[in-house]
Amino acid sequence: MRSRNIRRIAMAALTAAAVVTGTGPAALAGGGRPAKPTVVLIHGAFADSSGWNGVVRRLQHDGYPTVSAANPLRGVAADAASVKALLDSIDGPIVLVGHSYGGMLASRAAAGDPDVKALVYVAAFAPLPGESAGDLAAKFPGSSLGETLRPVQLPDGNEDLYVDPKLFPQQFAADVPKAEAKLMAVSQRPITGAALSEAAAGPQAWQTKPSYFLIAEADRNIPAAAQHFMAARAHGTARSVQGASHAVFVSQPTITAQFIEKAARERG
Image 1 (cartoon, rainbow, N blue to C red):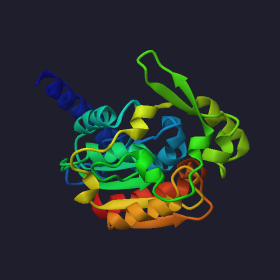
Image 2 (cartoon, helix red, strand yellow; image 1 turned 90 degrees about the vertical axis):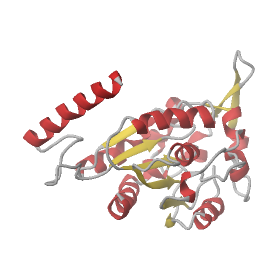
Image 3 (cartoon, helix red, strand yellow; image 1 turned 45 degrees about the vertical axis):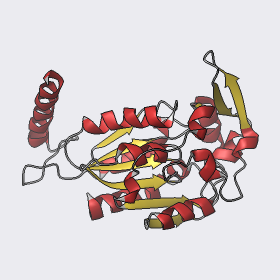
């Protein structure tokens, strides 16, 4: 109760500032409600929140409050719970965006949440209960990710998986400028092997909420055929990006932001 009151006070302060300046995440429409939904971004494996920078810049320019979730990359259930806690801290409508493994978390975290008005999958997984990221990536031929992974053994018996930095640009970000892709290879965050093999459980939000799929047609992590399959299964709105790598949100930030804004306008 105390934390809820503190959050209300903080939001009131932000709202007051927005009314005075006309800027900031709580800028209001004439009716006293947020003018636009908050966009929450979830990065996937072998990436970090900085990969969204180009998208965030465009969303904020267009007046969308934006939050980037720090994905623990430890396991589907635990990571989804972390995202859900973040969603619960945000007032008003939300458009939830997941890249890659982040789609596994968005699907679970938003289930039953009335504030989440739409889901956007950016080269991402949209599982049914019982399906893992590994299952979906292997459903159609074309993924070469497994050949590039390098394990690091952890004290608890699990292992962290990294993409070999020498292979990262070609595998993960083939359409990103080479110098930037090399930096991404160094800053990549590992995911546990257990997370990639952990099956989704419980209701999945895409089964009841409007879903949008940005499909990277040259993806070497999640084959484009798998992305099309998931979009069709969800009866989602899909847009293909020809020549786009798994890092489409980095190489094509304008297209990605425009697609997110489409979901926000139609459903937010």
